[in-house]
Image 1 (cartoon, rainbow, N blue to C red):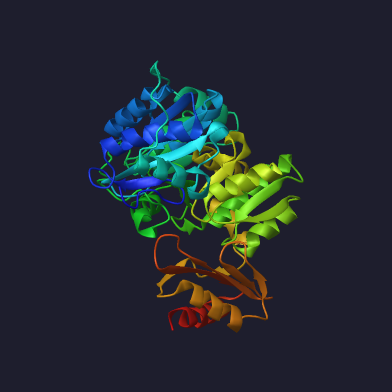
Image 2 (cartoon, rainbow, N blue to C red):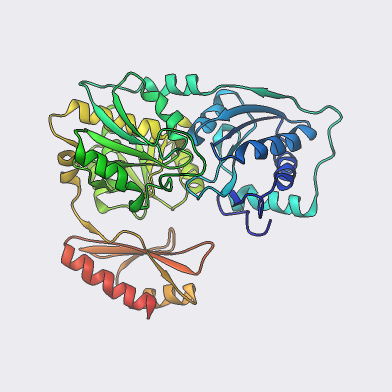
Length: 440
């Protein structure tokens, strides 16, 4: 059980650090912490997701909670079900993009408000370890089933505005995007890749942030005629995009495009973007009449900030796209629909729609193993003390022609660098300069 309680979820290797018995106790602990009477539970296609569901549901029902079994679904569908069904809590059984042996739980309160380490996961860990459960209920909870897919697809299909036929390549990675994309039925042509559910991930890891996993989709796009490609992660709460040439579109550029589209009908709305995003994202939001807001990295932080400002939309560099329409949570289907709407209305291909907002040169996220992360941050603060410094998440340093952010990992001895500059030459020079300080 050691180490499975993370900053944003519970995650471990099935049969080793995460067992059915631990899942049973987690079910009891969720009730003990939240006092939830009605809990919706969805699961991904991993072979051990069903036994984990059975154990978790048994623990919840023992305490008196009614469990609504969503069966196989995407994580965005579980968030939608949480609000639609008036649940007190929801659990999604998934390990997202992790390899097949992994599994875990994403837990939310009512209205799909996520639990993080600071807002409940550490409490659940303590309850499990100390077996400090609430008394067993005299009347056990009931377990019923509900198919959330029809309601989810119908709700988000209403945002489609497809003006011409499209052919879209979709890489499902043998995972839950297969169900998420049912939202697109009949709206445009889909050419599928790896569209059989298989929790062993026989073709490639389901992680569009790892560019190696996009190779098959890139090859297919370059061999055919497609308007763009969408590539889902394991539980379909993230999606990556390729243009019609098969080139990878940076995920912050998708944030900018979706923000621009939404602001056409919602001028003045608050839009969030994580602080690793390009300067161009803020500029596009301002040019489109919106109010740009930087956020910390991590879905629990972004969702909380969105609620505080009643934000319409947020995008994260990792491919999470958050919408007020889904309780301020992710909907990868809606992100794809907005890109499809945009492409169908334009006489330009997606690559040409992106080109004007790719204004700067980014390093991408670069990880460095360090012995003492606080000492590294202190050294950088001293070296770049003349910059405009922001402490929202790690340290951000901004100059007129370049900026960078450095953050420590929550779980590993790593420092993560993101850097951007107005020219490629300056980006490369500054990148090498800052890395030398981090690693020196």
